Length: 451
Ligand SMILES: Cc1ncc(COP(=O)(O)O)c(C=O)c1O
Image (cartoon, rainbow, N blue to C red; front, top):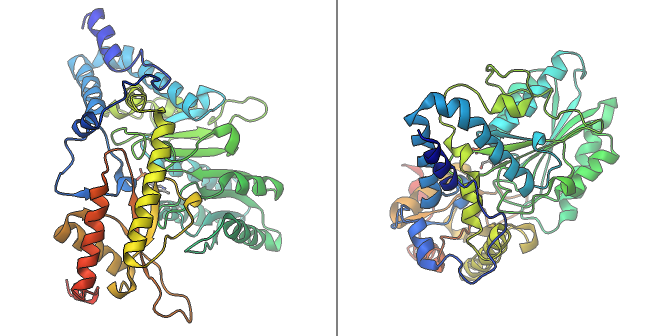
């Protein structure tokens, strides 16, 4: 490859991207947005950006250019392009999340991998005698399923005691969360046990609620919790992400959910300690490769031969979001306003309510479904989701909330709706009408039970 070609490719890959959103009136147009997402299945009202995110055509094209650059001359790519490309992505992420230093940012595949890195470290601390048997790791009851399994695999097996913070749902205020958190912390500290790690979601997955992380971290500091890991799989592009402001020791967010990157890319932030020691020097990628021992960021940038293209398109993603008014901040704000408006429209149509007040939501909202649908279990919720996809072309996750003792005729099913730039009001009308039709037909989940 000639140096001109490399230069051109780097340009296409976003080397010279404007760091700031546009100020002029030449913002991306509705038809350009439609064409960027022209590969979406037009038959489906996709109101579930939260699960798998989305990736526009221009970023897919940038990814393809990186893939071809590799396949054209792999050795040249490996020796000359890969590390500088990943460093450029890390530098952009560092700026986006207001970290102190690029060494605080490692790029990994996804939030699941980031959780494994942090919890594997916790497991070693137990095994190596730095933590005592019975010491506590705290997590929210609504922690993501895979993270809960990681707790089992790494913490419980190593002798740690996992304490859950029960969270109310529907939830009405941050105070309810803070109060439950304090109580769980007290339980964790009883019998003289130390709380070694708190794992706190920034935006819980199911049901979705924006957690007051900054406040909870402050409490952890006051109460002597050793370290805090924020699982913010949904955060970047969805809610405010500022490492200095939040003050976590470890923080991860996917970029393939709300930052338009293809799967799979996440960052793991590891805070520099006061001595300025290189962060991540004691953390390791679970896939051990040649770079073992050179710091997490370097280890993570080479975990053997694989496709690194998703990690290289961050410049293209920044370029993409800057085509929108206000850049990613503008996108975030408009998504929030739109999803709240659509949630309220649906709740009104069905005579239900939102699962939390708007200020506790980001770009996803929980909306109560009519009680007459008879959602009586997690399995019902999953079957109804499948039915909505197959019979109505609506993609939306459903949450089952079991009634508390004495509760009768309450809403037991909530839909988690998302809003992203490609969504239209008709997507939500389609969902509204599908549910109205089910209600009109006297449908209940019992009908799906024998499937
Ligand atoms: C809170 C939370 N943690 C972790 C994950 C896992 O993300 P990934 O599948 O990209 O690893 C998710 C995915 O939805 C999530 O919502």
